[in-house]
Amino acid sequence: MTIHLGHLIHITGAPTLQEAPAALVDIADGALVIDDATGIIVYSGPRAGLSEDADGVTVDHGDAYLIPGFVDAHIHFPQTYSLDAYGGGQLLEWLSTCIFPAEARLADPKFAQRIARDFTARRIATGTTAAMVFGSAFGHAQDALFTETARVGLRLVSGRGIQTVGPDSAEPLLTSEADAIALTRAEIERWHGADTGDPSTSLLHTAIVPRFTLSVTTQTLRALGELYAEVADTGVYVHTHLNENNRPGTGEIDSVKQLFEVDTYLDTYDGKFLPGSAHGGESLLGRRTILAHAVHCTDAELDRMAQTGTSIAHCPTSQLFLGSGTMPWRRTVGSGVTVAAGSDCGAGDEWLISRVLSDAFKVHISEPGDAGVSIHPAQLLFTGTLAGARALDAEDRFGNLDVGKEADFLVIEPWRWPPLEVVLANGIRADDADLAREQELFALLMALREPAIAEVYVRGQRVSPDEG
Ligand code: GUN
Ligand code: ZN
Image 1 (tube, protein in one colour):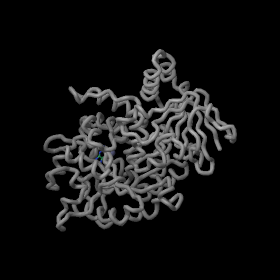
Image 2: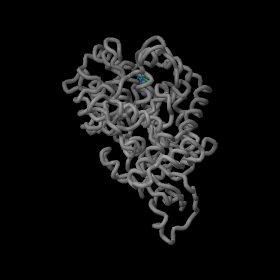
Image 3: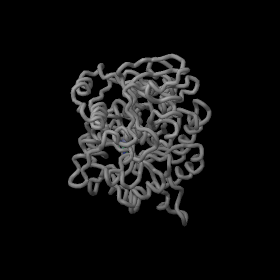
Image 4: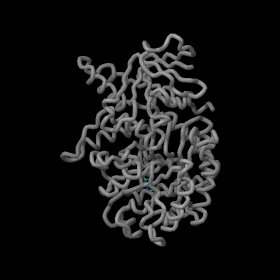
């Protein structure tokens, strides 16, 4: 056993977003006991409640906070060096000018190795213990990503980014229709559950990742639907973008509707629009599907996502950066769809999920009229941890510090980042216990920066870029 002593903060149980404030656990004199053989939490609570015979190594973190590892529900591996890239316009211009050329550089295996190392090191530095990672077009780059992630011991869901059509600048990233399927199938066979040989215990999982509707054809989508129907029972995921840019006429959403002759963007992932069979093709929606952005959804799209268990990766930092607009928070979470946080690096220029939550707080309190909402600190923490685990259909394994979960947690030492330390030491109303708890969590999330993340654990094991 290993006994970690510190200030525990997490969202217990399996609440809805609305129930998260009542599920907030905050124990200043806390203890987390982990079974070393399995990495599973066997005790989580006040130190005073530790049983007499709890023996093992004790790690006393002093006044440090122990919080669940962050879950990033949408981040782009091949854009590791493309944050803050100026493309002279919104989504489609930025993709053509900056991103497709940057992603083409991963054709070089040496470059791919280096970017895989740097991507993984950034994840450790920012405490992103689990992530849905939008992959490179190149198989060797995906091999480098899975290999490096396995070496350090983080969780990873990823799949090669599939593109069968695109502008000239995307040409190096395109494959034939047949190769799109063959390469995706090969990646699934090689990496899905590879570390343990069993996806239900693995840290490594694969996904089917069409870049977005404008990067593929009806034929690609139909074939991917068929592949998904074949492999879904092994827990393979689906990941792509939805309803991000609505610039009239030339934006992403209008282009999808015009080219694919669909009523809604979501239809293109749902199989039913596909010609050639009376009932339509196989759907790519489901409990293991995460759609990034979903800024401009109709009620029908949100209802269909809720009905199928499809989740949204909410990426407010990216939406600010590319001028994509504001996802209506109340309407979206009110639909019952799980909404997790995504950095969307590189369009998002923050790796740290708490910075993404900070942007979420700011943009949603600024929504006009009745739509504006001051998101509760417990709901912010929920969105960056437990909701991410739920979106990954892995809530039974991680996402909070409950007994029985695999121990994914961060050790936050405020004294490593003085601007955080001073607000925690001086900014909290001590005369009201409930308010003090909420203010403390809010300050912790809003003022947290990388230097304060002292240690990162996945399944009870310390993760570091130099070890493995
Ligand atoms: N839509 C298609 N590709 C991308 C991408 O790389 N980033 C973002 N933000 N949206 C996309
Ligand atoms: Zn993205």
